[in-house]
Amino acid sequence: MAGRDEIDARILRVLRDDGRISNADLAAKVGLSPSACLRRLRLLESNGTIRGYTAVIEADEREHHMVVLTQITLERQTEESLNRFEAAVRRCPEVRDCYLMTGLSDYLMRIEVSDAGDYERLHKEVLSRLPGVARIQSSFAIRTVVGRG
Image (tube, rainbow, N blue to C red; front, side, top):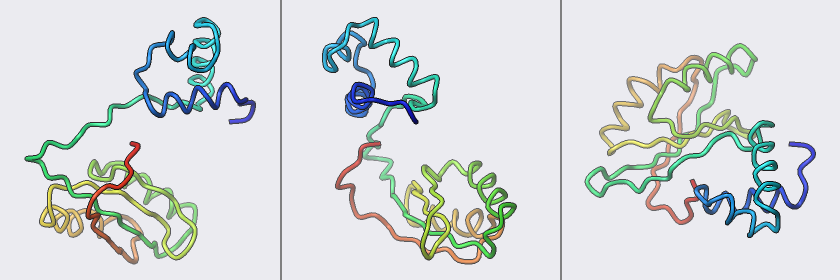
C-alpha cells in the first residue's frame, strides 16, 4: 500500500516473526510509544496492508500432511475464464494457496493432502473438473526447508 514508511515496514517485519506480540513489546521494538504503535497498527489493518492474523500449526505426526505444488494451465485466459476458475478453486479446502502466474502455467497452487491416494482422489474428483482446466502438472514436496506461513 502507498504511504508506508520505514516504521510501518519495521512493524510488519516484527509481526511476520511474531503475530502475537503485545502492543507494548511491538512498540518497544519499533521505537514508538504504545499509543502511536497501536494507531499505526490499526491503520495498517484498515487500509488492507494487514489482512488478518493466523496461527501456523505444526501437523500432527499421525496426520502426515503431504504438500503438493500444482501448476494449472487453462484453455483460455479470458477474464470470464479466470473468474470462473478462481471462484471454483476458492471452494476447495485442500488448496491452501493459489497464485495467478506469468510464464507457462496460469496458476500455481499449494495443496495439502493426507497422502498420495488422497491427492489422486482430489485430482480426479476436483482439480480435473475445475472450469477451463487444460493441463495439470504436480510436484510433491519432500520436506519444508523454509516455512514462514
